[in-house]
View 1 (cartoon, helix red, strand yellow):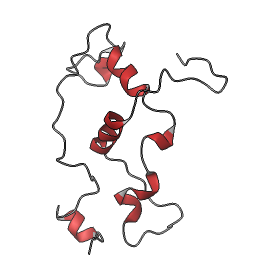
View 2 (spheres, one colour; view 1 turned 180 degrees about the vertical axis):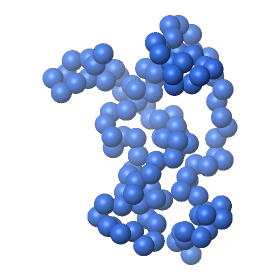
View 3 (cartoon, one colour; view 1 turned 90 degrees about the vertical axis):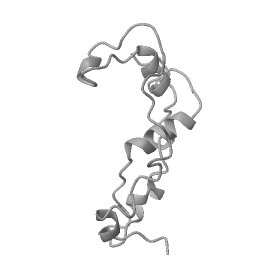
Length: 117
């Protein structure tokens, strides 16, 4: 069946990343404009355009808009010690796929409704 085993995951036969190999790596968004201050600490050889940061952050409403946490492959592993609090590992590629498929909501706001930043 479709149940994962630790042996298959270790052998590379199954993956905790459901989006693995489904999307090509994007070298650049083509965004122009100011660079995020300190971006050299994120990616040593790359400047991160502020427009890219806004494009990602503007798609995240709350933690639940990033993933269906309880249905991630890591949360369904066999032999989980605490099924009420399973490991919820979100692979980078899955995060990227989820963000790309989300609509832009707007600039993030704090609890009082004021723009963050």
